[in-house]
Length: 565
Image (cartoon, rainbow, N blue to C red; front, side, top):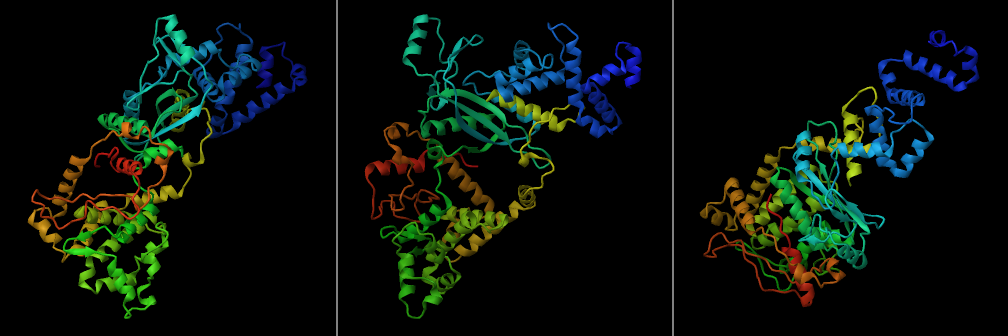
């Protein structure tokens, strides 16, 4: 190869090549690549293209240097990942290798990927989902610190960089617009610049037949000043959920970091351990009157077992401290209330069936939400069983990189760019998640639901509940599911307690005590109140909190009830 090129270029002699080690190594490398198979040759496709571009542009005028699409994509990726200074540093020290910033900005404009501040791109999100043929997704929201700076956007006649005010939690698009210099001057003097950038990302959930994870989508970005409340966040998530639902996109959850305002917004359900102790502590209440059908649920049943000399401590596995713990958050005492020995004793007495079922439901909560060794099938069975039983009685740049990375993973052309890939996203990785996903796919969901339903029916046998359900024609699984769905759908509403909670301090974030005031609604099958499920709606526990805590807890229980699945 070298001799033929030398023959056609007399000025290029062997002596000249020998004087330049770089030329020797390049010739040797090109010869080596040329003898490799196609797969190995494709690994060096971009590098060959990059060297050719630099060599070709050396011999041309510095004005309007030509660049292929591969080089343009590389330049755009480098600019996004490294920033303006990094890009300029490499471009100046490798002349002819990369296009100018002017050309780069033109490329970005031609991609039609510019995002206006506070714009939620739901229509583009729908197209993104249609391209991947997916329907379910997780939403995420987070903030990052930015340099305080005001910029003018000529396309929207808007000044960006001020904190975007929310309207019911949703940022107002193009809020800072003015044609008056005095108004602009007043804004600079009276309004603080944004110190944080709030970003919303949507991560599609891959379907069973997809081998790769779909790329995330940048939904919106805007400047904030960290004054948003948990109420603002909830309203914003509600807005995103409904807008996506209108486009046949189902948001199945929101993910954030541990910022206090996000945790407050997520506080619609207690953590699993607290859920267990909450269920146990309701039984310990001296004022609560719990009934299940024609059976009472009483702590005195457990006192009688402890005081009964017929049963030893080994027989019952229970002590007085377990049913009257000083620490109301003691989890180990909850486990003792779910022992098989205690269940056997309660089952032998027909008058303690209500208490037995109540404690069996406690065990289901532990198996479904706390126990780590529970299999997926058993966990789902526990969740459905408890539900049936309980229901019966009561930023732009990174987005472009993700798109290019996705195309790279799906396309095996000669000049592909290679991006760093997180180990969780590698195609050759066989993780425990993949194995557990396969297990989930093999589960017969309907069988589990049916099994949970029949177990609940067997447990309630003899409590007059089944007779009442049969009388009201809602005993079968289908009719019962339809009835419960209608009840939940009719009562699932969105309440705005922002005016009541606006003056509440950081104590709102604290987990409420188990002795807080609570109310329980009856399951009213009809208007005649002929229902076997009953509770005392007016009780309050011994350690009742003050009015402020009561207001917070009431709002916590009723704030933004999500619509029924």
